[in-house]
Image (cartoon, rainbow, N blue to C red; front, side, top):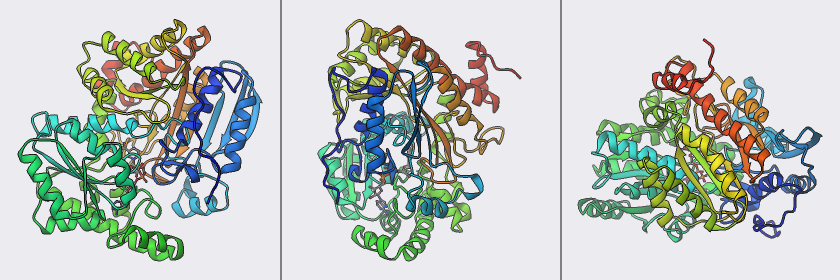
Length: 549
Ligand code: NAD
């Protein structure tokens, strides 16, 4: 067991790096390992199964040391969580560039990755873990809020009042589910095998109540649904077992999904019939047996979801590749379950609307509230933004560096950098602000079982777009640019890119912000226009984006 002290980001005005730009990256790195933010900080695991921020303790120490001495015209290179070089570049170049979990395509299998990982040659970076931009549950909360909102609008008169949603997993991403379902007035039953995680979510008020019995969970859910009251129930149990028990009890929720970390059947998923303790024992001592059990279980798990679908629940895959795992293990019908991006999110991306996040480097919550107010006043016409910001302001606690995530449309995203940079320059905030995002938009990721599934032109597995975007963001002067493999849906299934840019109140900063925050969403619009999405083509024309052909 590691005895060292936990990591916390520095806060306040004094710098331990040469510039705020580099200081921002140092603070984001340490923030993502803060025990209030990360899932397993002792192992440098931030979220999403085993998504890490640095390869090992020595690499982390060296990254910190290198950032502290990095000059304003130097760039630090990170190879799968290990610092491997510092080069003199120029001030407008990124301060950190990284490539994580990349393998030659024909070798990009779980087995190969794990053997390289065991030799200490690579690291799994998930999405925002390796790009140091993870901000806890809030990051995914709004995507879940938007997804549930879209389902409510399409099938349930724009509200989840009186509806019961069944899902599983209360990990880093999964715990956004109960809260966002409650935000739409619905009742949730979320199955989680790890009681300690459940207790954490109760403490954070993401769940209202925890039970051990499926029957009790159903009773409570039905009572609340009848009263049209929101209620978030954590059911301590094993998801495939519970799903089948519910089918046997003839109970059909309105909506069914799953957010165990099933993209990784060994470290992220507990096979049916096992307790967490039994699973941990087998993982350590009988790995092959464990893999066999997990493969069989995931098939039965997805079969149960298909049966819920047959019984007319709205069923969807929530980005953990559970369908892909079941398909790989023989369940041909697995892809009859649709994916949340193609169904509910891609139409928003076509309009240039997408997730942004900003982090107050001062550590002061008042900075985030001041930005909220500015945006609420400026975008009074954007009702979704108004609903979201008002709700999170009143209901969400910060942990780690105060941060806000918000879906903004194309024009708002371009303006955001200017607004924040001016606020820093005018002394309206107590310190600079880092702006970053998830890896989910059209050009930020190629993931044929999730974000780029069922593209209109069939370009699902074309991975040039995230590579182009990474290079473009580096050319535009983003402070950190990452290119990664395997986030969300696992090794072999995705290539994606992250970026961070800093509003430090300077003129040079303003120029970088303007370039990066325009190009980053613009390439997603271009990618969708290129694939034939009409709304995106209209956006290209409206905003006079230069797109040959
Ligand atoms: P995590 O590892 O933090 O949490 C997974 C949780 O599932 C754990 O708490 C674990 O105890 C629980 N679990 C595993 N097997 C179980 C079982 N059989 N029954 C009940 N609980 C079980 O992972 P996370 O960060 O919450 O991510 C969840 C999944 O969502 C991952 O596959 C991730 O790649 C994917 N993901 C989705 C999105 C999205 O936009 N929807 C974004 C990023 C990642």
